[in-house]
Amino acid sequence: MKSDQEIMQSIRTAIDDCTKGIDNAPSLQYQIARKAKGEEPVVRKISTTFILAMAILAITVTALAAGIIYNQNWYYNENNGRVLKENNLVAYEAILANITENPEQSQSNSDLVDVVIQDVSWAPEAEMLTISFRASVKDPAHYELHGMWALDTDGSYIGEGGSTTVTDDSEDRAMHWLWRTFETEEYSGPRRYGPPAEMMDDGNKKLLLIERNDITLFDGTLDVFGSMDMLRTPEGDVVFVEEVSLD
Image 1 (cartoon, one colour):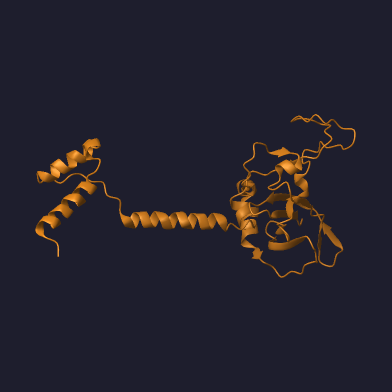
Image 2 (cartoon, rainbow, N blue to C red; image 1 turned 60 degrees about the horizontal axis):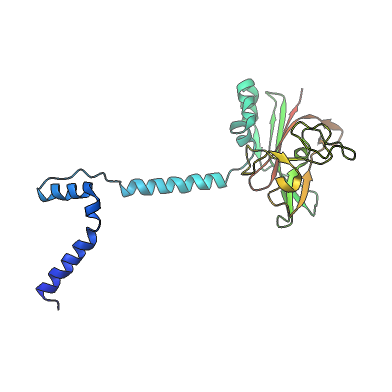
């Protein structure tokens, strides 16, 4: 059992440990002096509940960012497709009101990619059919997927005989350029376009390019044409959003 002297020494040691650096902290000296006089110092307290709430909020935001589904709801509300709401509110409301998610579908076999129709909207009020589908690579360790439209999207590549001196406005370059979309990608490189190996997430992988050719309705006798947007997600999937006029 400790003696009174030993207990007092332990208390002094604890106080010394707790007050280290006071000489270099005038504001702390001031607060201790006020406390000794019986005055309550002004202390700014941060609620542990507030800290916990902020932590939960940060976790929730992170989870939402990681779990974004790049479907029509996202496209027409968050991406460039929101211009439809500004220019044609009737069509915007009709499309979102008639969306069917994960419609029944059958898939062709492919060794390289999976293609899934995310949602479809048949909107008679706006005489429009809209479809979003997502393509993902089956072997991401060896292949990297981009949209065909991301290759030479400026239309400048002419192949053999073109200039090997590449400039931003070159019309006769002899090499392909791969373009990156910044709206949804976490690409941090200095340029938006350049030789494919330099613009890929991993230039050591094989580059796969995917294109959608056409849409056929019903029994195959009706080919429809419309406008198409293509984007690449941070996860490396390629998403197409198709708008077809049914007039």
